[in-house]
Each structure stands twice: as structure tokens, then as C-alpha cells.
Length: 100
Image 1: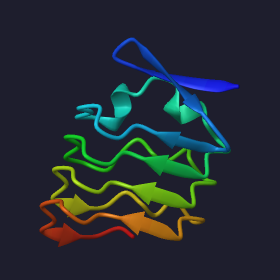
Image 2: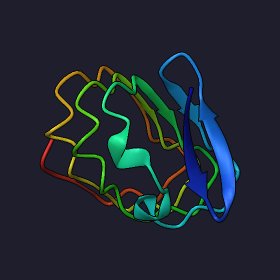
Image 3: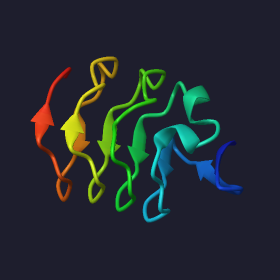
């Protein structure tokens, strides 16, 4: 069993998926243990306060990324995620797309 920690609370990775919706997350880098989840296939970060897509470089097996309902203005830093086939970005503040 794998776990990550955010603000002192543990969250379990189940079936290579991690669900962290509605947690008030502002920065992906503050999710302790996320970088070590090399086999993670799905990451759900919906309805948070994330403003920048970053710190996902190590998640090379990620296939699904849900960033619905955040504060993202720029779509960038996704190029290392070569297996990514599903990306949810609606309900953000997107102004620019680069580095896909």
C-alpha cells in the first residue's frame, strides 16, 4: 500500500490512482510523496486552488490528470508526461498554452 501526505493527512493510492479533490491544495509540490509514485496512472486534483502545473515530471506513467476547477492560467510543463491521454482542465482561468 502506498500513501502520500498533504497537510499532515494521509491519502492512500488505490489501483495506481490518487484522488485529492476538494483539499484546498495551492501547490502540487506540497503533496509529500507524490514524486515517488512512479507507477501512478491517474491523478485527480479537482476543485483545489492550484495556479500552476508543475512538479509532475517524475510521473512518467501518468495517463489521466484531472485539474478541473482550479486557478490555472497557463497550460505548460506537461511534455514529460508522454503517456498522458486524458486531461481535464475545464473551470480554470486558462490564458496560454505552451510546452505540450
